[in-house]
Image (tube, rainbow, N blue to C red; front, side, top):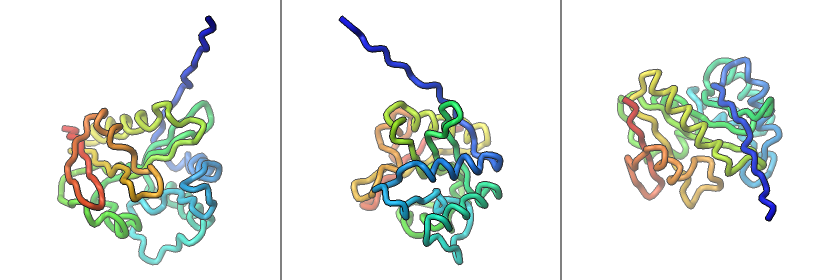
Length: 198
C-alpha cells in the first residue's frame, strides 16, 4: 500500500512594520478577495486607527495607496504569514478604542459594546487560497494574542463570521473557541468573543 506523504509548509508570522508595506500590498494585489471581483480588493483600509471622514476608498487603487501610507504611519496594524518569501496570510489586529472612527467600525459595529478596558480587536483574516486549511489563521491568532498579552492588553476580542456576511473574513467561532475565546455579547447582528489575557 502506498501512503502519500504530506508535508506541512514552514510558516513564519511577522508583525506588520513599515518595511513590510510593499509585501503587504502585493499580497492583496494577488490574493482573491470575496467574490474575486477586483474592485472588492479592500487592502484592509477600513479597519484601522484612523478617522475615515474625508477619505476616498472608492477604487482598489485608491485603497492600495492609502494602505501603503497607513502601514508606513502605523495606522494599519496586524500580522503577515510568510511561507518562504511569499506572504500567504494576513490578520488585522489593533487597539479597539483607537479604531472607533474607522470606516468599518462606523458602518457595521454598532452592536459591539465599548468600554475603557484595554482590548486588542482582531478584525480580519485573509489567507491565500492555496494555503487555506493549513492552520495559518490559527497561527496568526495565536501570535496576535501572545503579543497583546506582552503589551499589557486585558482582552483579545473577535467578531466571527455570521451568515449574512459575504465572506469569512471575521474568522469562525470554532477557531476562537479552540483558542480559549468565549462569547462576550450575542446580538442579531453578530457575536463578540473575548479571551482574557491577564
